[in-house]
Length: 211
Image (cartoon, rainbow, N blue to C red; front, side, top):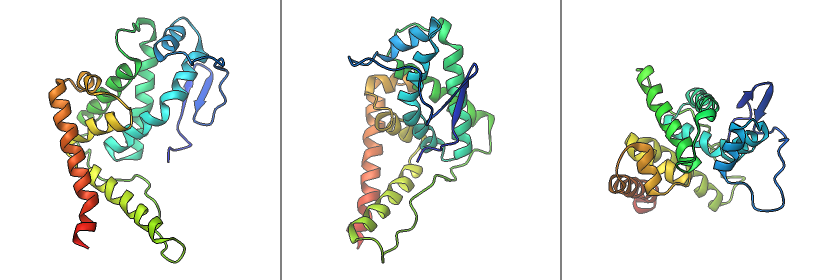
């Protein structure tokens, strides 16, 4: 669940997950991200609000599951959007906006780790409440437990594998874009994703095999 308290202020306009946008897309195809960013560069604040609404949830989930700490994720989230705002005047659509956005997010996370030597793998992500077997069906209980196993397995992944997996699953990016963001080649990104998926599947299936 994305924190409702997460918000961002652009000039005098507060942005939040629940904010009503002044920008109203037409009935036609929604503008591409790069077009919105160019409009924001030219002074259209509503275009930025549309970009924020389009990407804020996925970006926040990526950061939260990458660093395992809600306060850190909140701080990095704000830093990322702040850098996007500062970069608007020099923005050029040489790559997909999502590649640009997640490259900034990836670099902000790396900088955060370097600034905070005490960064640990402690998780404070809100998990589902422990299922009440009296009120839940067997399937509901198993789904809840499977989600817990998945989050724990995600935490246990090496940082570079977790990063690639989240860029693929949360941001919906392809291997070429992931490679560009993480500063690797396509084959390295593909290998990391393959190993991450294999480890996650193994961790989720383990209780079924041992029961």
